[in-house]
Length: 330
Image (cartoon, rainbow, N blue to C red; front, side, top):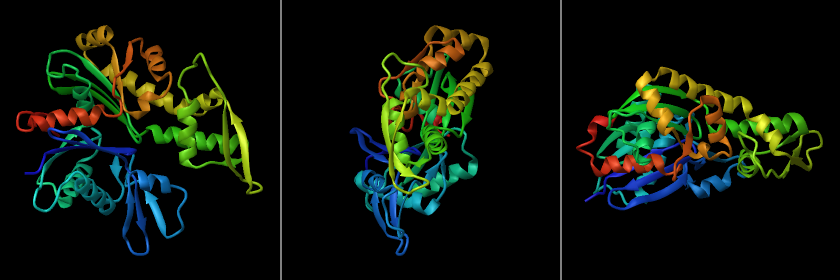
């Protein structure tokens, strides 16, 4: 008998949770294709290693952008590969719960469920990422109590106030960690005249990126291609420069959180002041982001224990009690 699965189909990473087993797969949401033959060459970590290093006939692509499916066929093939790696075959078709951004359209919802069913799922249900994140963080979502989560993923940032098993206030923007990477790429290109790839930009963000000044700040050496000569070139970047380059994107995230707080009822706002905001997602791990949000909102901000796995763990709890929790599905 097939094990029911929960899938966090993220713009940056895809995680799979199997009922009774826990997380069985954690791979980058990248697939490498031979454009001449249409064959899938690699997926996940292997495909991620190919980004920016492939010949013209091989493309390493992310089939999801800004939390939405940009290529239905490639996404379907990627989901089929994920299911195969999780032990699914033609003879055991599991029920699947898929985490998606709350702000996706009805057309995008149908595209995700159809892709999962064509890939081999017996049934596919969707759950919003903020709700799944709140469940995964162990918040009392079914109580008459205000719980607030800020989920910053690769392509979207979602803020939700949850009470009595439902979303009371929601603010979602199609901006995430990849936008920070692009901002760093643009800054280095504009100020130093060198081109760096998205992987290098991500490495810079992880090494010295921050949303708030930190005590111990070190500079980083960045290597790229000089736009004038075409030769390799090395420059030194400071944390202050990186912080300034991503400030517009961080400000947009903070504004969305403030906007969501403004939608919450006064009684729920009181709960949030007492218990704070919970920060989840890979983007939430940016240094100083919790301090920046706390400064902007005057509300305590806590980074949860497992920010990257929080969403799929919440969906996993739903798959463990699939029939009882159908009211939480979208």
